[in-house]
Length: 533
Image (cartoon, rainbow, N blue to C red; front, side, top):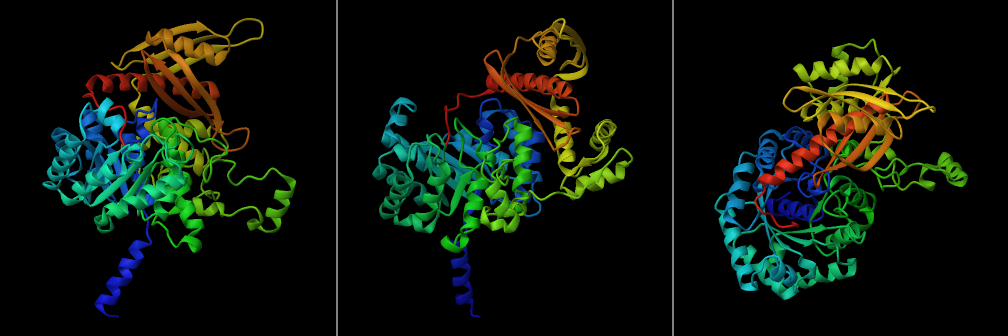
């Protein structure tokens, strides 16, 4: 085969491949109540690399020292199984771009993603600026970023509510200055699929140079159309989709990564497009993000919800038993929902635990292994056998334990139908000390929460409380998700235990810690805009 022919084949293959740009750690973390620390962001980033995403938008480095540290750690450490592009978000300010570069510069494949609004409603009311100034800022920002690296992405924020001719001017400026990716965001989720497709088609007419760069789409779900709009963008020629695990993100969230990926994979024969994502890692990615963010996955969520492959109707059950494809358009195993054969019990040793975790992709050594083994033994004494999903929950639970500002040392609950439940707790404080509290409540969990408030001296408002089970059976680990508000800042926490009251108490103190962390980050912020692409 000649060199030219091979180049043509490679170019054709590239034109049929859609790049997956994951923004779970940036836009996803902007969801109310989510506050991930560096260790948690690294854990998610490593899983995203195993999943095979093309780009990890690791954060917004200028926002706080903690976000900068997390982006830098991801850039330095996430290199296997194949190094993804690691992107840092930046406004068009020089300081933002400098911070983004310093954070991503050690990545094998760094990218700076800069943005500015092009809609008149943003220019007038948010930026309090003019169209000419926007064009100047876009030009200067891309040029400044190109001094550092070749891979620069530019986004005209709120593009779908912008004048298409003006947006085209700004995109052309960005391309002229060397932008390699142009991302068109539906920032407030306003567009409909046919409108979005027509908008992109018009951009291609106005900016022929778009054919020489990667066109990207970033759609929000305010009207429930994020995935539909993203797919419309792909049909219009976009070859990068910006999305998040479980669809988390600002307000109603982003396009769901798992839905986009499985749409392209399932209908590949009809549309001829696909991604490089390892779909068997989708379910685990979903569970990990859910546990670390405290955002549960709705049961009827497409692809990764627990009911996604469940059949209640007798007619459906009969059909699936005879031939799976009668009512299932996807095989559950392709998204990683097959039963895992790993089963450990109370007689299993430290080596067996470490090997089982390594088979699942978790590399736990030293003190972290000792801590995980201690919790494993505690749970194994109460639960006959631990499955892969139990171990996964245990490891991510221990990751939460390491970063809690508050910790649950002990609790005692007296509950009876004859008198109000009473709880006593001992809580470890951020400064290393301990405090005790006691209180009554409407139920045992309410009493424990009130006792924790008394011990910490915080008055928290409970915004959300959910209980689930990690696996089936009477001895299943209980999984509790809590969202609280303290002093105007929300925080979420999750925990697992065989005792649901213990899990609730652990989740509650973690939620308090997250609320405090968010308060500290808010104090360190530098006046960022309310939204980003």
